[in-house]
Image (cartoon, rainbow, N blue to C red; front, side, top):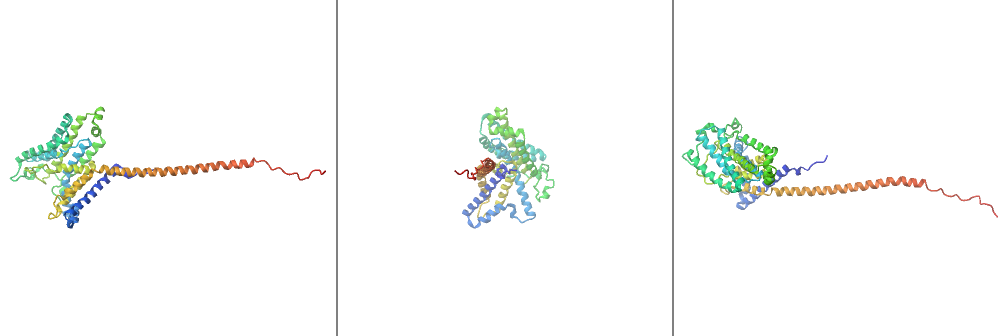
Length: 411
């Protein structure tokens, strides 16, 4: 039975490419730290890589592991938003604005309207979906690039949410704690908070994982997902095949926006953080989702791992010596990793080229061996045919003529 080369598997190639990006990113980050201050470079890079392992084994490590996981949830949802649209040939940079819209509606409906958590989650997803669908409609019917419309909607969404949430803010610049105003709006933990030694650990975590699995199934195993990917590959061909390419574009960005808005709700409805109504920059969570999506090779399951890794090194950056380095050193390393993700296709091309050359050499050797075997077989066959011919020729040769020994008559 012929064995297949495991390196030819696309999933294995994606995994190896991502690992190369991570290793090179950490190494280049270490080189940068050496230039800043060689004395503390090793301690700083190990702190970033360790993350929650910085703490000794026990309740403290479990607590900060749980915190890392909780912060991974919105990042994972934003990465799913990015990759879902990218699979359809769209770059949803408006994910950040959709995340903001979801956060604003979730917090406002929880504090001002006193709605239960599941209703707040649905409204947040709808808010993100509206922004996404608006960008999709502009793309489908007016050919407005989704990047341009997304960037504009990011800022519109930010200032609109700041205005909305200023009505439910505390005397400080932050919104009220949901726990104090409407405990029913908090996502239930169902015992996970006690299990993971972290009060903000809720069912939002398994919900996000299940959503990632669902997105993977939709994109790869359904007719709907096939039509969306076909539209992304060539919308003219999709239209020729009877697919509604404009409708698919709108639906894609609608779902993408809903995922981003849902991620914001799953985060803020744990009450782990409050919205600051004076912020003048779009939250980085939506943009970090781009990093997580590409590091995960645009695969929903891979995005679970990549989102956790990015949040892991982000948390590790908080343990860097701030007297020597800035706390954004983890952002620098993740940025380098993301930059290297642009070479993932190059890494895969390199691997495929090497594998193809190895296969060619192997095929040539097999061909030479086969030719040699055929030559030996033909020589053996020729020899077998020649032997009976020689024996037959020997048996049919004339008898030697005997000489006359009687001497004849003498004269």
